[in-house]
Structures are given as C-alpha cells and as structure tokens.
Image 1 (cartoon, rainbow, N blue to C red):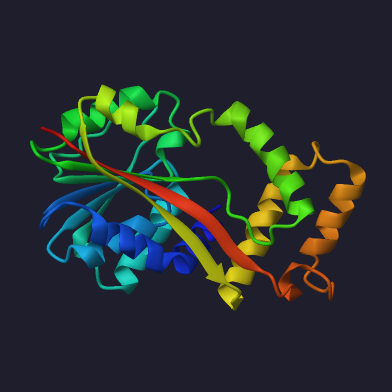
Image 2: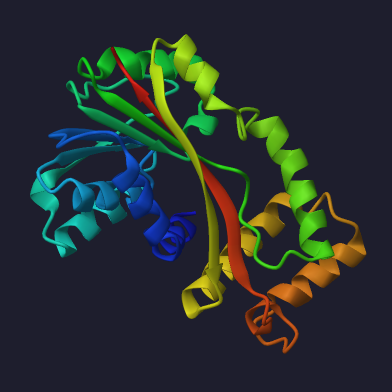
Length: 254
C-alpha cells in the first residue's frame, strides 16, 4: 500500500497543490495531517504554508518511516513531527492546531462522528478542518472489464468501509463545524511512466481484493491485462490514464 500511496502522490501532485491553495486559511503555524500515509498531504501543506510545522499522524509504522526519510531528504525534518496512533482506539495529544487535514482517511474510521467531534475539540478557535475524500478507486481504462472489477471491489468495500463516498457536509455540521466551502476536482492525468506504474500496482492490489468475486473468464482477462510482457496489456494501452474525482470540504470551528 505504501508504494501505491507514493505513486498517487506523484501522479496527482498538481491536484493536491490546488486543494491546499484553495483552503480558506491564512498562515497556519501548526497543521495536523490525520491519516497521513507516506506524506502526500504533509509535503503539499509544507510547501503551501512555508511557516507551518506539520504533525503527521498514522497507524502504520512503515508509512511514517517513509515520511520521515522523505522529510530528511528534502531538508524538512525540523518542520515535521510523526505520531503513531490508531484513532479508532486512542486520541493522541496533538496540541492546538490551526488546520487539520484528513485526506482519504475519514472513511476508514470505525466511528467517524466521534473523530469529527474530537477534531473539533482539538482545533484552535477559528481553526479549519479540511476533509478530502475520493469518489472511488481511480479508473485507468474505462472498459467493461474494469467496470466489472470495480463493481466487485465496491461490493467488498461496502462491507469493510461503509462511510466511503459519504457526504461529509452534514456530518461536519453535526459535529459543530460551519462548512465554509465545498468543491470537487476532476482528475484526468494522461499516460506516462508513473501513471503506468500507478495503474499496474493499483490493479494488482485490487485483484487480490476481488479474486474470489470474479468469474474465471474475467480473472483470466484481468491477469492478461496485468502481464507487463503482454503486448495487449495495461502498460501498452493507448487509452491508459488516471481518471477520478476528489471532493473537499472546508469546515470552520467557531
């Protein structure tokens, strides 16, 4: 999963930067990145807000190690603090941040309403909470086979992550926030070497999720698609691209 997160950060970096630039917040000094993964949001926030320091929170030790290593490589180690925590179990001491960022992490929470209330209590007065969520798993080809693979994946994830695809506006309001802005970004990144690696790695992971849900003929077709040596495979398709949407909610604590 860490490899996919790194590839996603590389491929959609321009869109992530557009989100940070859109946020209605001035010169935050302390930012918290909830569910930071390998640091896509963390480094975009450090770039957008050069006076800020970021506390990056994740439950995965490997993700945090990669993030720390990257911060050292970029000369940003003094502006980044990492915290390992499972937010479904315990809430760490995160200080009083001016901005909390949660990208593709809220739908993983077992009790997101509780986490929203905790974020509200943690933020400084007037602080901003940015929730960024995916419309779904990215599409790379848009053909019938990919549609069937996605349908199988959606059935599996509906059981595991019932909050994926939710409208977070009402949930934020219920937690005491005032929603000041909402937007949806359409992501369409044309074929490149990085897009190819991202698509191949992502669909390989998806195969593992749906292997028991696909009929044999679809599984065989998917394996042929994922074969890097197949001249008709994914990496040789002219229509290869990253296609998805990302929705953002900017919510203020009074």
